[in-house]
Image 1 (cartoon, chains in turn brown, orange):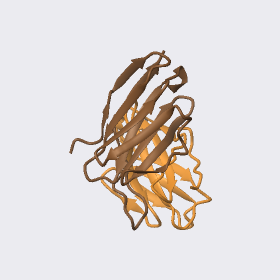
Image 2 (tube, helix red, strand yellow):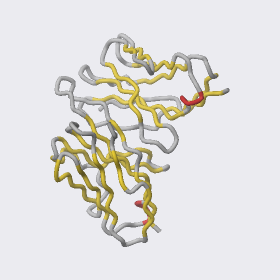
Image 3 (cartoon, rainbow over the protein chains, first blue to last red):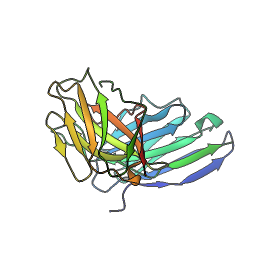
Length: 117
Length: 108
């Protein structure tokens, strides 16, 4: 099992540019999460999907951020236009939701470190 | 989801048991206690979870008090590789909200 795969691992871009982060969840998992981590704010949940449908996007900072999950094996997080304050590590995680417990163990990717100059 | 309170940091000698406390006094009956850890620069890693009963796996043990208002994560024989930030999270649905956690440092 390859685990959750994120790309790119590192991205350096200039303010105003579009940034697209990609995530391939673990095969068979039905939930996908995007988190952002900074020193100041810690780990923040941005959005999560269940069966490819966005369930809660209340953590998405503003309209510049968008996330899609066109199929069960791929998701993107897009920032357009990017700003220096978007600099952070963005983590993707997936899980197999246990309907009995309404929870599931999250498996995280290695993260995408974004620097916006 | 219920809020959790953890000490900011702890030290533990290598080879000894590390006991990490967590208070979750507002936990409701159907909320689970989950523990994750994050080793520097890596994604968080699941450790263990429980509802009412104590739990044990190959990584750790989880002791939940009878009133469920607090819990303790136990790493039985801490190694230097256990140095990490440990997060205690109370979860009702699959939405995990991470707090600031406890920074555990294992001392050689």
